[in-house]
Image 1 (cartoon, one colour):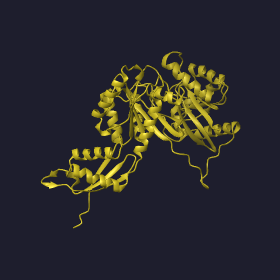
Image 2 (cartoon, one colour):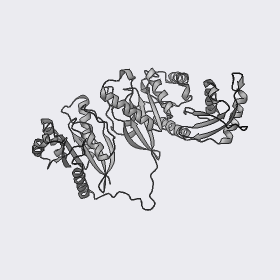
Image 3 (cartoon, one colour):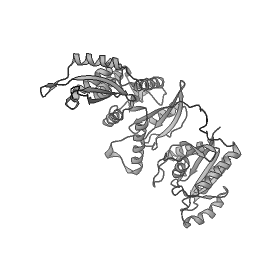
Image 4 (cartoon, helix red, strand yellow):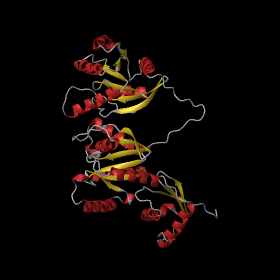
Length: 449
């Protein structure tokens, strides 16, 4: 049984900084701009002898309409699922009316509460500590998440409540043989703003885990959510919409884009989500190119398919366009889905697992060299400066993505067009559609040297 701690409070009181400090990692985006956090972010942390699950939440703001209401619903859901609420106020700003309103919300939830007065690195916060007693949430703990002040006392308090409620969950020791849980398959959902990434993840999870709406750019953090699909453990990453660099506005979007790019680099499978009404725009192609350059396995999903007429004809046209515009991932799976209607999800997951199998595939050296001989016989490399280039030997150096080393007489002289011919032939001969293939050229040893 896990012990859950929800960190709540007004915007810009330091909840995400405190979340990162307790987790021991820089997980949540942090900036001086208020309202940066929107979706709930979770992380497991070891506090003393207790293992707890931390939940970072959006800032509570008055209002019952639009995005503000949806943010508040997510925070209230985190409070409802928590065993302990860590209510954070700003020690520099003092106790304001919004703190009093949301203190009533926390008290009415009937949960154990710890009141933390953040930003207490100077004497200016002393009056706020005494004012905080009026909130009726117990004795306030002065802390400074940014300067690591008072975090030890806060950790001890959380550990004490954890022991009283569920008992200590001992940290596993390195003695003996431990059962190692299988590594979950990391899947990043990326695309332009407002193509339905968060809605797709909510449908896959079967709950309103991510905040969605008609507004573009709601998602900011890259949030990971666990999922079991046909016995396979998956980790889905919802990411912020990626726009062209010249259109990125403000510090918040810069941080969001950086977090999305980080999710692509650390993912194993990347699902590029397109809008069925506006597919394969320039930004879509740039994102696909970035994924291929990073060597991630790619699956293309076309969302809002329920709005398309003459679907068979449209799907055939989209696949032809994909082959023409993305030759570097020739044969990539293209799956039509509808996140709002919940259709096409099974085919999407099948394509993801198939791409993962190809991405991890290793080919025998003997078969590779037999293929190389046939490829060279069918289309010999050109003669450069009157001297023919000799291709001697090929082997697979790595997988994830499939990486091959080709030994030849003059690697720098081999034209790029011939390297593309070899890569495409390799894909077709060994049935590896859509997988980014890396071909490294090396000069073999001279036997007469």
